[in-house]
Image (tube, rainbow, N blue to C red; front, side, top):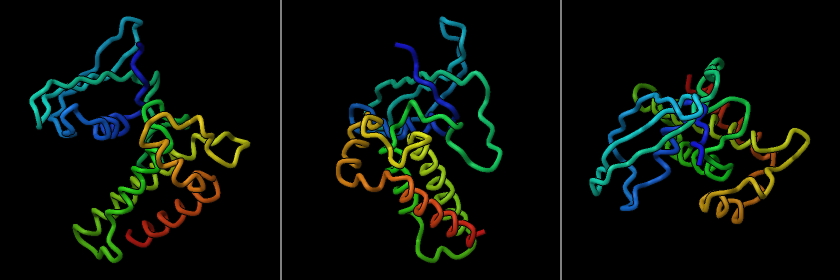
Length: 180
């Protein structure tokens, strides 16, 4: 099977974080290298030893033909939908980051952590929206390929409507603007 495309290092690391070892541990020190695939394309190889059980872990991701520009701020990928994470996983990630933000983070280190979390929450919501067809209003049900993603979709399908995603994104972006 051909390695899946990872549009950015941030997307690859997020994938690694969401895919634990068979022992359940997600942490492992990650060594990375760029390698050439049999077809001549470039790939990123991440290797390391599981912190929980000592099992060797290895992940291989195809690199995009051209680098994704981070112009305009933090992004997990380009304009196309992710091949690594489905829209439910992206929404779960956004929820997790937004949940780290206290009601009044204040300034200093707490404010910096809140800005970083909200920035990633917004970027993850942008990833969900990429699964909505240009003329569509919702993420199609067949876009959900992971257990986590399907479960979230089945529990709360309305959260995958374009208007609702936009409203939540705008709320997070507004909170972020007030933290700067």
